[in-house]
Image (cartoon, rainbow, N blue to C red; front, side, top):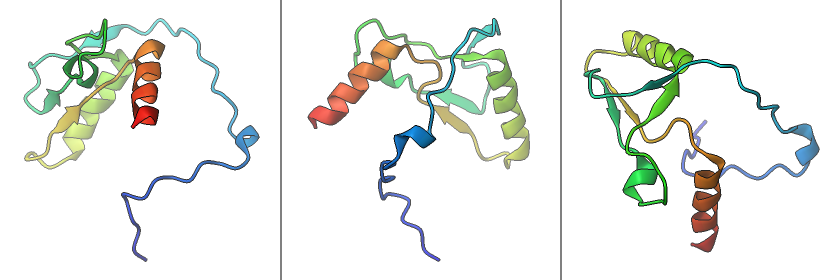
Length: 103
């Protein structure tokens, strides 16, 4: 079976089957990713696109950082991770959607 990875995912015809997730604060500390890890690279996409009030740094929850480190232990040494974004404010998502729909 050949799968076209570049084909867009069709929108769901019945959106009621996908309820909105409940978002709540879990008080997990945020970790600022730095260049300290030799196999995690960052390209803060919102900042590079000059979206107002975007950050030059990328933050992840502590649990996410631990999972990223675990992923790297499972990958061959010549592989790395490139992160474009992690925690995004609703405003950034709204701006990106507006840009996407205008194109």
